[in-house]
Length: 170
Image 1 (cartoon, rainbow, N blue to C red):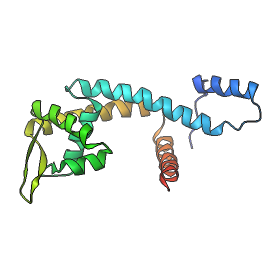
Image 2 (image 1 turned 60 degrees about the vertical axis):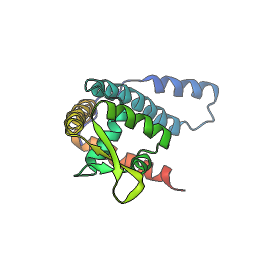
Image 3 (image 1 turned 90 degrees about the vertical axis):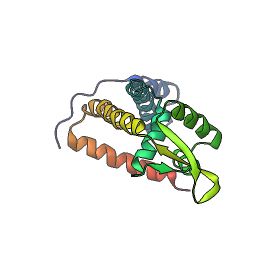
Image 4 (image 1 turned 120 degrees about the horizontal axis):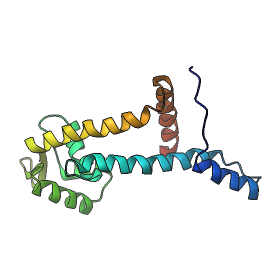
């Protein structure tokens, strides 16, 4: 493993030091991890929002377009499938779909197999937007991840996978 650069103190270190002063009995290891994960999530969320805004879409709207794109041709899902994948209420999904349809990035049509159902399909314009937006978002993420070498980035990805799996267990 390569040598690590000297670690600078960050805002989480200051919080941990304060707790150590007033409550030295506490084990703040979890706070160190989740405090940094939370701050990282906020910082990257802001960066991703800026990357997607260049294409006229929000992060939530990107998620809808990306879910359709990842589904493969013909890039069509039901609103229920989209809601389940994105963990959104049907009301929240409807608002996103309305905006994306007005922008010409997707279209809704009757489901040929269910008279009461709808199908949501990515338009050619939507396909172009999501392909450009995903590349822009990955560039932002890759630039941020460049603070780590490839080996440490892979190690971090594996550790986060383990941690996430542990938190998703019933």
